[in-house]
Length: 353
View 1 (cartoon, rainbow, N blue to C red):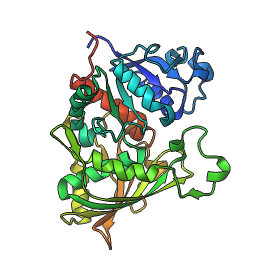
View 2 (view 1 turned 180 degrees about the vertical axis):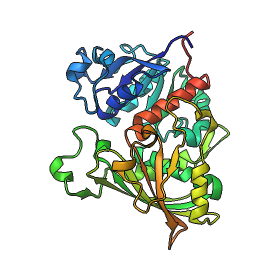
View 3 (view 1 turned 90 degrees about the vertical axis):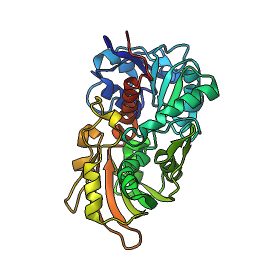
View 4 (view 1 turned 30 degrees about the horizontal axis):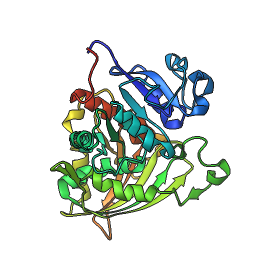
């Protein structure tokens, strides 16, 4: 490859859009050449309108003129979408119909039968579903969906257990960071010193998406994993990092020591190995009794690893454990970028000649 692949970021002014821009700065495969947002932001310099949250906005992107999120305006062959769900469905479909590869963080297309819902190390093979999608819809382009941020964290912890022992049931309570609500997000007087025991639609996403992610691709369709999931979602006063406390029932009971060994040896799909955004260890195990902690562990593997700890026997099911992952990196922008890197490696995205 003699050059980088031009990409656009849709919804570039929001929290996840900014994370895309930050993570793609200096990326060896992709180069942000266009940014797009709503009508009210269009035709203005990106650096003048974006309320930047972390570090400094890359200068070459800051100088870009914001475009409308319309395939007639945006020319890049690959688009990373951080669009709000209220508009993402139609806009992303329009880009795919126009021949673009769309890597989406929105919920709109995740559970559609011919859309791969991919957590890279867990089910990269589901990208083969794109052949069915293109045939069904007559598209030259494609849509690949990211999972919900909490479901992504859980999937990376459950996949090794499911492969080794079979998962029979999951009971989970999430403690989700405020950055998952976007900007300006949750009002300070609601979240400071508080836990909010509701995140609209979150529990349903977790309960539905895990079965598809951990399912098998057979005959051009995903056969969902059959285990039930019960989720309780809570918003907490943490900046970044979703923590999930899980009790897991297994088809073949395992001791905490056996589970720990499985986690430590698991590397996931081999197609991820060596890619720019892939962590060396997608699952990191901590042995301390009080880890993982968001303040200490959220940036593990540059935010692309999940951290598992407190692996213990469970009095009702088989095992209980705590898992932490970076919601805007692993659970959003970074996950999409890694999916894109896999597609380049597999020839699903053309490289510059």
